[in-house]
Length: 469
Ligand code: AMP
Ligand code: ZN
Image (cartoon, rainbow, N blue to C red; front, side):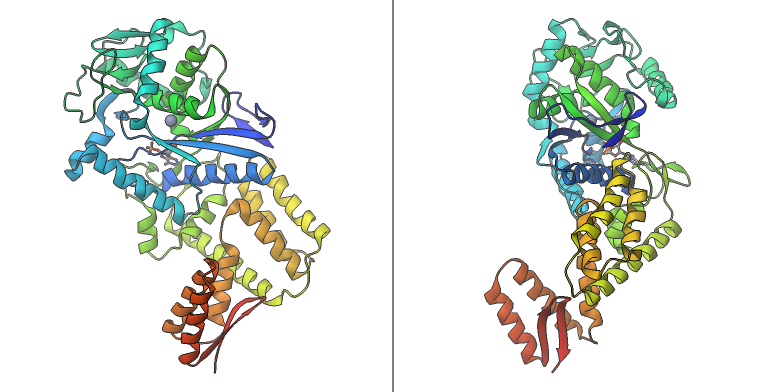
């Protein structure tokens, strides 16, 4: 597929280092608070990328870290550790906060059909790895001790600004912060690899190291966790665009200094979800979470659909009006799918199916253009193919989009089939779950209960049907 690479600033054919296998790393959440829906935009788009690569037949090894130490309030090594801030806010320990918000993050992911990467590793589990890599950087002369901390010396590199021009605004801010705050640095772009005797005396978690009791900087986490699980050659590294500088720039600096060769081939950056006040962030404006959207009556699938409607390299403006439009469009798709389920009685025509899915592939092959992917989805409904073919096409594209169109449509058909009391509808859902879990004895006993209440339930090609006896 063609994928835009932030390193080269061009769309390139994505070619993994080992044919057929993709090593993919994703910057995970800093677990000091709930993820906001902006963070989740990044994870949704990365999820679609992973699923699309798998859809094309590649084996994807995906690793994500959990930042539970070392990420300071400013990306330029100033301010407090965000985790400590979260712990103080809630009068809990850092570990309690980390556990709570890690679980909350994966709950949100589940609600949004974001697949959990095979490997998820908290930074606090990898201290030994960080010390190993930092020691080697010291030995090679890429790092130095000053004021009790260990810094990476960016002047030792031939080229530091690997992503070049594209975030000069962020760059100016980060560099300015450094100059004000940290006089230990030899160069304004140097960054902390390991904190010991710094201004953060009340840091809760500290570990022994060759440089004294301390804790790692944020950037070293991702380099080490990636190398630990995915080796020396990374195919794809993902994150939101705010991570490009300084986080990813510093990751490249230290990883390549450590390895002595190029590390990651392709950098995938998702642009921001903005509100009218600018970039959505955890510290300002309304804190929009998946739970809040649910409270307001939005199905999480509507938010996923809203994100997929636009391209990941364009910033996306959030408003309830835009979300309502997405909700209406999504509901229409589900209703059309429901009709197809009712109509479907023949067999899928393989060649017609290929035409429909090829159109979808062409859209996603072109730099993961999910917006055109949704157009290809809508074209399925408009096509002349029979209902079974259309349904097969929807099922196929949903391996990537994960919008749950068919399950939602089946539910709609069930609740449509008659005016069913809530109690019966609930039993039907329970029976479905039992059948899915292959507990047929339980499913049968639930059916008997439904019959005893005066309703008949049967499985048909169009889904579960219920009628009054
Ligand atoms: P954090 O939990 O702050 O470490 O961020 C988690 C991920 O969300 C990172 O990949 C960030 O780049 C990304 N991110 C942060 N803010 C936004 C936003 N407004 N829109 C999209 N992605 C974001
Ligand atoms: Zn990272």
